[in-house]
Image 1 (cartoon, one colour):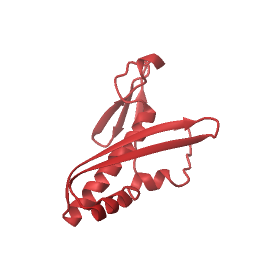
Image 2: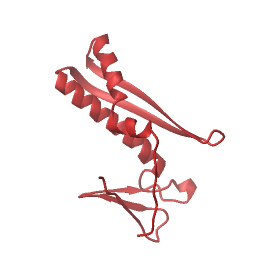
Image 3: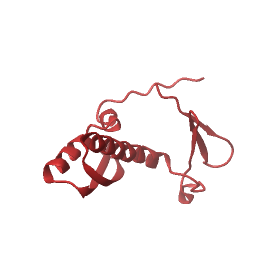
Length: 130
């Protein structure tokens, strides 16, 4: 089980996020009252999908011995308030000497990254005071 700790003091809206030995900063943009000193929370969600996709592609290509020299994953996140729906759009660019069959396989693998699976299925959030 992953444990993340988010801590916010009095500084608007800078939040320190920790997982094990790693720390990152989340913040809101200046136009939302923050200092823009880190990614906004919704950007962190989209970046998690992008990173997971890129890592999954790298692992698969390495295991297959394919010449994937780079993979660029672009993710946009939109909240459709009318439909109460989140839409994540992902564009994958693959670089290296890859044939069409390899490219198609990598595209299918992108949909199998762990975060894609999590976000594509029901999510339950339980909240309590600690």
